[in-house]
Figure: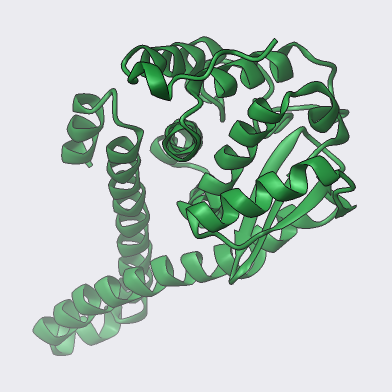
Amino acid sequence: MLVGYVFYRRNLASPGKRSKALYSMLFSSIFFWSVLGTSLVLCTAMLDAYDVNPRFVVRMVFGGSILSSLAISGLMAFLARRFAVPRMLRGMTAGPLASSRLDGIFSALSARMDVRADLMEASVGNAFSVGNAGKNVVAVSPVIVESLSVEEAEAVLAHELSHLKNNDSLEKGLARMARLAFPFDPVLRLLEPAVHRERELLADLSSVKYTGRPLALASALIKVHSGPSTGLNGGGAGYFIGSGKRGLLSLYPDLQKRVEMLLDMARHMRPEQKVAVPA
């Protein structure tokens, strides 16, 4: 846990490396509480046998706790993929997106990024993506389609496809399930939003990698943040941009931090790679 935190703090400019550090901390917490809980159960169940054969009981408790904790970790990953992720799609989409101008852009991006997905209309939020067992969905709201330029829309679509390519639905779902399974652990309470924030920053970087348009993505972030609410209240509002909340419990990075990172990327790109911010 401590090693993961040190690695996390040493890689402030690398969302990918920070995500790996967060997941080492996440699994450490799951493993610790699983071992502790299983040990207590086995100790209670084998208390009478301890007087007869203490060495056997100690080996059973230790070995059983390790195996059980690994099984619990695997089970949580399975449940996140089987149930948590599919639930996210229910009531969040309203059929295929009726926007011919995005069809070609989306198809080209999907092929370039080697990600197969369906383009749907979002009934909540502004843009999001969900992937599960080969069923990938990218959803955008009509507001996004109408308010963004072609370049900005391409940057947003690349951001959402990056979530699918990076398998973020499973990773975010596992972090959520761990927090719900062990609500008394303050570390997991902080790890879940931290995982979300780093995966958003990583998706921003991936979007620029495949489009070469950091300024277009920065412009899209600002436009969506300044636009009207899409009707979803609470901490999950927005998905692509988030609710605007800040702090350790926020699921989304600070808008200013995201824009500054993108502007810095634009400054370090070769002149021929830069794309002007659309009007």
